[in-house]
Image (cartoon, rainbow, N blue to C red; front, side, top):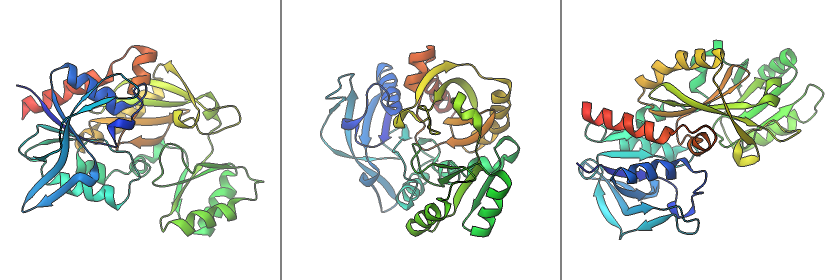
Amino acid sequence: MTLRIAIQMDPLERVNIDGDTTFALAEVAQARGAKMFVYGPGDLSFREGRVIAWARPAKVQRVRETPGIFGAHQKIDIARDVDVVLMRQDPPFDMAYITACHLLEMVTNQTLVVNDPAGVRSSPEKIFPLLFPEIMPPTLVSRDRQVIDAFREEYRDIIVKPLYGHGGAGVFRLKYDDSNLDSLLELFFSRSPEPVMVQAFLPAVSEGDKRIILIDGEPVGAINRRPKTGQVRSNLVVGGTAAATELSGADRNICEAIGPELRRRGLTLTGIDVIGGRLTEVNVTSPTGLQALKRLSGIDAAAKFWDVVQAKLAAG
């Protein structure tokens, strides 16, 4: 039977064919004969008990200027017309994102949604790791200035970042003699009612930030991302460089600790960030790194992902 897949994503026309994970997932599904539709979160509607998407049939191709070939828009009933939904649009993790999770949650008893929208909704990428403080760096989440000052006094060299940022945006390192903390917190708190995350700086970041890909809670491979000289952010989108790497004993312990909870929440495809054997983030919204992993190590995580998805469908 032909697998029918709807991908909720940012515009396919603008993807980077050499790096985009959603493109890689679509490419493997297409090679296996799947029929695909694409739509954006703004194309999702609820009416009279049905969740509907204004979607386009699509095929992908490794042509930089035209990565997608599209059919005419049509309305698809998410519960009736597709077998699998990939929820793959990029953050911000805001109320629009939460609403899309709520809508897709309504169809999960009829259609497999990956990652599970209830699991995504309850697992913000910097909040989820707080369940495992023993494998994290020393961490504070707060808006209370006195509490933040006390944390800085204890750890002296700190990282400050927004709770719901992505791609390394808004991440700052503040050494103890840096006088910019006041201005930085004023900026954060004027823009958002949320607390910030403050962590002890891990010098091991100079040796790299591992992105470990897990499928159904099991690690399948990793890349090591190194920051540019003098920088602390190693994300590839801000200039980090990647190399193949192996999992250390500490890395495997982290995967064993979080794997059961990932499976319980239906978080089938995740990417975790590990620095010096410490867990810093668990990416569940649109985890990246699959193309880099295949290019550097030969591991085809996209193929492994679809193997798992098809097994889940067969199991009912």
